[in-house]
Length: 380
Image (cartoon, rainbow, N blue to C red; front, side, top):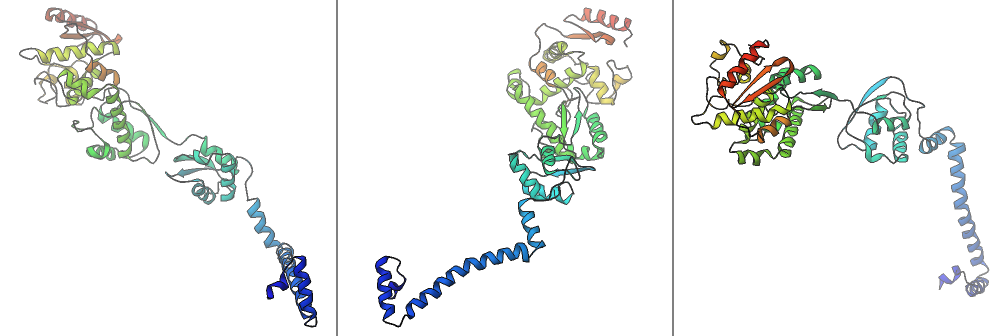
C-alpha cells in the first residue's frame, strides 16, 4: 500500500521507516527530495514577485500605482466644457466621457470618488457645465448637485399660438417653422382627441427645456402640462355636466382669458357667454376679442370696418362659439369656464381700460350707459 509512505501520523511514519530500511533507504531519500521541492515552490513565487517589483522595475511599479492610486487632478479645473449625461448611463459610462473630455485624469478616479460619496445612483440625465482638469471629487459634486443647463421659458396666460412659436424660436435659437411643423402632428405631441389643433392647449407656464430638446419634445411638454390642468379641474366630466364638449369649454376659456382684466371677472364673463348662447333664439356673442383674433390684431374694441370681416371667428356675424380657442388660457380661465357665476349677466363693458375696470349688467339699457362711460374714458 504505497499511500502509507506519505502518511503523517506516528504509526505511519514508523511503518514508512520499516519499509524503507528493507529497500536500502531509497524511500527515505525520495521523501526528502519531495519536501525540498515543496519548499522551493513558494520561494520561487516570492522571487518572481520581487522580480516584478524590483527586477521588472519601473513598469511593475506603474501598474501597481495605477491600480491602487489612480491619476487625479487637483482643484476645481480651468476651461469650461459641456458634458452630456445620457438617459440610462451609469458611473462607468460617465467616467469614460469625462476622461475623454479632459475633465478628470482617469476613469478610475471618478468611479472611486462617486462610490466613496455614495452618490452613484444620483446621476441625472442632462447637460452640465464642468471644467477641464477638475478633481474627481469636484466632478462628482458638479454632476450630482450642480444645475443642469436648461432653457427657462415663460409662456404667459392668454398668449396666442403664433406668439408661442415666436417665443420658443427666439429663446431656443431654433427655426420657427420647425415648431409650426411639429404642431401639425397631433399624435406626436399628445393632443387630446377633441382638440382641433394646438391653439388653446399650449398651456401657459414656466418651462425648463433641455438645450437639445426638439420642437416636438417641447410642445409635448406643454400639452402634458395642459393635460395635468385638465385633470385637476376635472374638465371632461364637468363639461359634460354643463352640456358642452371639452373643446367648447376650452374655446369659452380662451375668450374669458382674452376678455378678462383680472381673475375676479372671469366667472362673470363666462356667465355672459353661456347666457347669450342659451337665449331663444340665441344671441350672438359679439366678442371683440374673437374679431381681433381673426384679423391677427390686438385690442379690446374692434372698429366698424373690422367688424365686417367674414371670418368664422367674427362672433358679430356668426352665431354661437367660434371654431376653436383664440388664445391659450390658464387654469383660472378654465375653472371660470367650468364654474360661471349665476347673476343673470348678459352684458359687460370694460369701462376703464387703463385700470382694467369691467362692469356687468343683465339690462340692455344699462349696457348702453356703460358703453358711454367707456367712451368718456377714452375707449372706442
